[in-house]
Amino acid sequence: MTTDRKQRLPRLSIFRNWTSLSGLVVVVGGVFAFLLFLLLDTVVFGGNPYMGLWAYLVVPLLVTFGFVLIAIGLVIERRRVVRSGDGQLPPLLIMDFSRPQTRRNLVVFIGGSTTFMLLAAVATYRSYHFSESALFCGRVCHAVMKPEYTTYLHSPHARISCAECHIGSGAAWYVKAKLSGLYQVYSTTFNKYSRPIPTPVHNLRPAQETCEQCHWPEKFAGNLDRVYAHFLSDPTNTPYTVRLSLKVGGSDPTHGPVGGIHWHMNVANRVEYIASDERRQVIPWVRMTNRAGVVTEYNTPKFKPQPGKDVIRRMDCMDCHNRPAHVFQSPNFAVDLAMELGQLEAGLPAIKKTAVRLLTQPYANEAEALQKIATGLREKYPQGPRVAQTIAQVQAVYRDNFFPEMKTNWKVHPNNLGHKCWPGCFRCHDGEHKTADGKQGIKANDCNACHVILAQGRGEQLQKLTPRGQAFDHPGGDMGEMKCPECHTGGAD
Image (tube, rainbow, N blue to C red; front, side):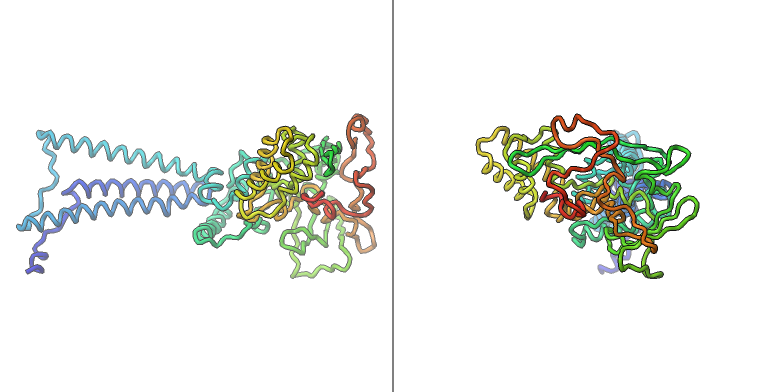
């Protein structure tokens, strides 16, 4: 009898109840949003790869919700038919405008549907732009990338979107980024990501396709004046400043003399190298081809290239400027800068050494670090002036550069722009690279090869400029043939 009754049930219709009709509107709005997302995702290259999450995850969930509403309406309708016992469907929704209830229902339905469609269009457009923002990459989708996002906010590229550097323009790299993004979503969801997040050394686009879209490689920079203020780790925090002229130069003979640090640019010269480690910090072989086509090879002792096994990379901007947007300052540098700016009281005895020591201690998490930094400073300076501000500033340095939960700080991310705390320039210019006939490259202690020291020391010494340069007077005495990073670690000098 039950089977016969089910067989007698007429075909249900979504046009006989308001719930199913509302579900239909949601489905139509979802499909509209999906098509708009698909258009943006397909046509606008260079957008954020995770924008596809809206099109292929969020919007389908909205459409599914619409179908659920349709199903609920049909179930309600079926129950009503079963309860009636006569197997008769209720009439179609007839618009009898003579009835006030019908007019009210129609106004509410049309108004709600129109509002929903407008909101769907605006939300789709705004979601697209939000997915391109650094906030989306750094905080919403990449919550695990707090170190990268924090340092990005303090970088010279803080107004450049993540996608402009990490993806760039063009369909091919956009597809690669999407495929990579899928794995990143998986690893984030299931806690499979590395700590620290590794630097994408091998899958970054060449600088010619990203950096040089804004930066002009042919520009002649000439010499740039720089002042580096330091404070020694002694009881009086002795200041020691170096003022020098960086020989940046250029490599395009049509805009200035070829020479200086930017001689390495690929405008006029071709520099290639082999790195024997993943982070490209050990470079035993270099090949240089000048504008005339003359090739010169430099090797470190005992290294012989193995064709087919060694990967030869052509040098570009990122080999020196490898931290353009994510700079993790060393504790020495960060504390020196804070003292130079007056944010840390230089009159506090041994504040340089104390602050660096507290910053470099191992901590389980940020909360523990901030608490122990405050405790350590109060114990050291119970009656010292501006102790509260000192605590706040050292804690700020820690928050901006140390991320214990992700095991990230200056140690794990080499900065090749310079040579103090990391090999940087000395990866090639260490005096150990030689040609087959014994010709030696630039030695590590040849300070005037890339910059001219104009003044150094403190007080009146800094007022006596020597345009032709002077020999570097190391405050710790003559270091002989030692290279800077052999002693300066960024946290113990």
